[in-house]
Length: 335
Image (cartoon, rainbow, N blue to C red; front, top):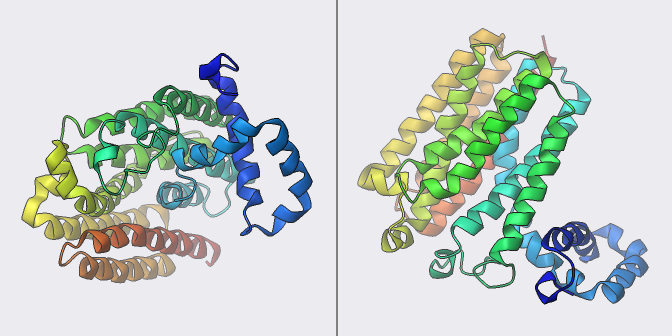
């Protein structure tokens, strides 16, 4: 039964669905582990039918079916952690930052959909999101966001005092972004500030301090985030203009491709500068060259500004993050 009908309170509903989302995922035929637990899933479906039925809606609310945001947030966090640890990060910190990234990205999706609840139904790409489609209430989205943030904060409590304090900044940045596009064309910069903060927390968690040279990595990731989120915004530009929303894609107008190229070059240049400070050598530089080639491909995708190709270019940035992370790991492993 749902809390709106006088049953469980909103937090209970969300917690039930958080657990059942996993069960629903495992029940899918795509998961080989689903068959041995079919009796358990049948039990849950029989005794908690409403929560079981709604689990897919919460899965979609947190955008777990589209993990690109997790990857784009995770890769720079991990390469910062590896650099901070000189190639030998604390295994516990690796787990903490992976799980924390998943939680905070999911929380960000919840607050984003809450902020866009009056707009998503008018945009082709977002019309079927759970709040816009009426499958999840705005209040449930807020409760889900709050619970996920608490879980992430619980993970941060396993680190140190400086990292805990920095997590408060991370939370503020994550909550500000969805509302920024109402007031400024530079919302992508706000997103970049939020997405880059995890890397700084990785430094403080691993070393207990934040060296000045780490800011180069922060700036680099911010530049990259603005570049790929501008590609994302290019796919929505027509709808955003009609709704009166703002973005760097609208701000850059016909200079959008050039500005993305400049941001991509500055990203690579800033990483190249950071290499000298952190003792990164040939393998890392090879990764930067390969990333440059991937950026050339993205420029070809966005050349005619087709919305579907612009979205493909955005998704392609997962490969960029993976390449730079792999190059970082290899460079730190091989003397």
